[in-house]
Image 1 (cartoon, rainbow, N blue to C red):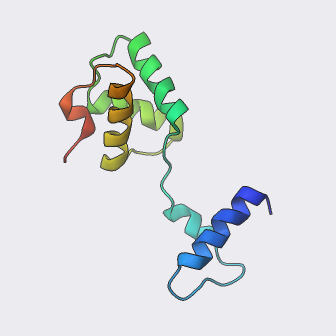
Image 2: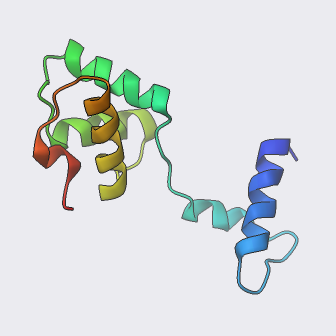
Length: 100
């Protein structure tokens, strides 16, 4: 098994209440939510600027997130990405971050 994957599996085994069987850990990967890296968030910001979608709103950020990850963004991830975009100087409307 690749070292990064082995570290994730070891982490899952350590935190799972009753341990997990040696071979039945693959479905647990479905529980891990995808997050954009900081570079991916910057890429999303550049894309929003290039498309003229600044100030970005919740839908703009969510569609960009979906395009990068093939997953719907959680409210926490929308808030995190919106904050990273603001810190980089991009205008993000207050509703882009979702419910607080």
